[in-house]
Image (cartoon, rainbow, N blue to C red; front, side, top):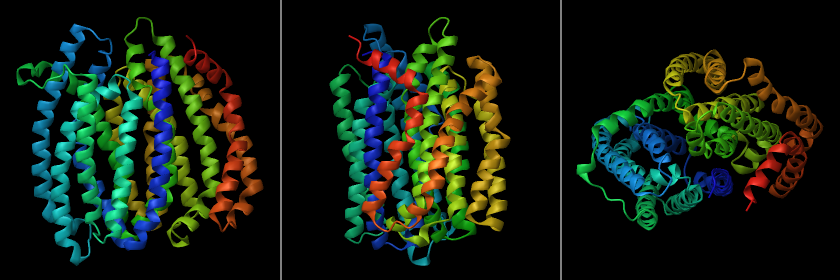
Length: 504
């Protein structure tokens, strides 16, 4: 299958599965909340955030593994030997990292309850959960090393199908365990069962598509480890920075405001965050193709053109979603979990801007730059942004509460990646600052001119909606209207894409 078809069907399956997973997750939350207090639910969010940090400490190896495997799509004896060497090396290194993570998590576990400001009755439970999750994360890292080849070889449909099955199972199991009264342990039990299921499914598919792969300690290659780390370590630093910038907010709120405020923050940011993750799949699924394209001779013009078309398409969608969310967030949260969990219009608008405008163009360009091997420069600026963001968020949350955290994140980004990522794009992908600016502003301004007018005409009607049926019906109807600019702006891209997909 061609790169275009692989990327297209991978993105299509990714979007479909992600949307279904999001819907299942969204409608499971009221069930979970009805069995847990907002304080306990906020505590569960923070616990999994902390353990997620531990899961990041692969030091960027997975990015190096995927990049090296992306160049071995052609089925030849030479590539098979390279694949066996890469995966054997990765599994051995991940095994060592897994042991370190398990030990670190268990050392940290006794102090977790105090750090999270957990109620006294949950002290032992938090200790035990952090310990168990640390061990589970270690095994998950080893499995990640084995299955990186699915994404690298653009088997996105397979990769996405497996991810969907596992995410769906995790949500359903969590709901079942919560209803059975297992409290915080519900989240842990579902994770353990899903990991076992994931291991069975992924290893079966690995044996089916790559039966020649064997883990052999004699194929361990230290030079290969250094090469993969030299690329991946920069992305690891970026990943750490991203976690500090966007996920540490919950810990700051839990520490300086309350655990209940963590729940309010999480519910109000849910739709913008999930929407951005869905749309960002467009660029994420293009990464292997970008790696292949970057290795071709005289690929500069093609890379710049690919970047601009992905950017225009992505920003068209996210700008449209921005206006839809501004219109529908209040009635949605009111019907979903109740008015008390809505953080207000100014907060919602700030979060929607952050995820769907500011972060979107930075994300698209960063993926393209990573595809051509530019990562070190991004990592340095990302760390500076994380430090500024953390300082501002801690200072502002004390004065402005939830709004202070988002303001700190936006300002930290404007001072750093907001201008630096476009600078790197011009330097490595070509073009000028003016052409980059035009690529950004065209979809944002055209979509906003049309969608913004619809928002002001319809906002009062949406504010008073009191039933799911009306909300769903009205949202579907206005979404069709809001998508008109998206189709007009990207009509040439859609036409070219259809020609390539259906070409014999």
